[in-house]
Length: 77
Image (tube, rainbow, N blue to C red):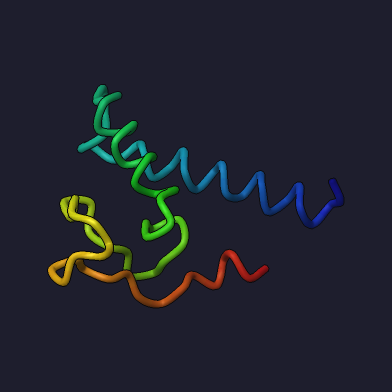
């Protein structure tokens, strides 16, 4: 792992740690788990600036499915 990759990984971990310090996640391991699983879904906030909402549980093939938009620049680095 080179220095840039290590710095990116370190900064990402710091951002995630800070995000989960929010009051809505304090002592809420199930909420953290649910958000984390959503974040790494292909249509989640880990990949898209405007992700498919967490509450959208229907198939991506369904016409009512809410499509994620704006691929995150983070993954282009």
